[in-house]
Length: 153
Image 1 (cartoon, rainbow, N blue to C red):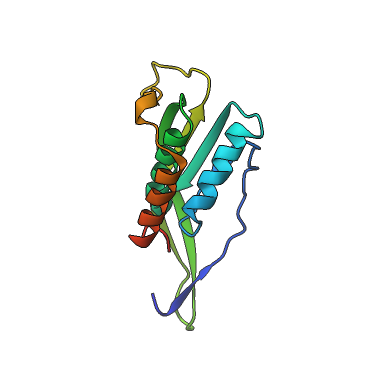
Image 2 (cartoon, one colour):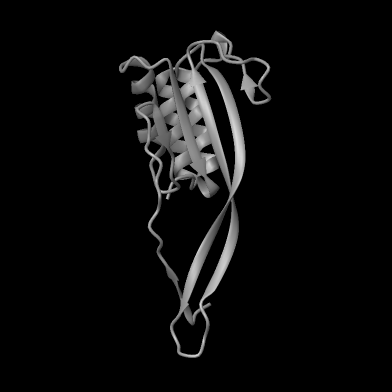
């Protein structure tokens, strides 16, 4: 593939709603956690939706678990899916044909809500018992440990 370069296609981004957070592999966990908490506590949202694709899924699960342990009584619904992404490659040398490759990318969407959600949904999780909630200092320490362990670039 060193004789090809990938062609960047314009993305048809769907608009991000006010209560949606899209996690990337490059973003910092502490920023996602504080933003999610501010949406739930300060901005008056009853629910937030946290989405990620590919390598950012692990970080998303950690962010959600830490938010749930800081804010008690949050119901959760998790959904997963997979999409196909087609990349186009242009040759750098004459005589070669353009290539297209397709890759399957996993996606996750986690809804956290102060109000009860559909308990019959396959991805439903009830709120964490109050005695399992963590203090803000313990959550901050967990973020620092995760960052030092390489969870953050």
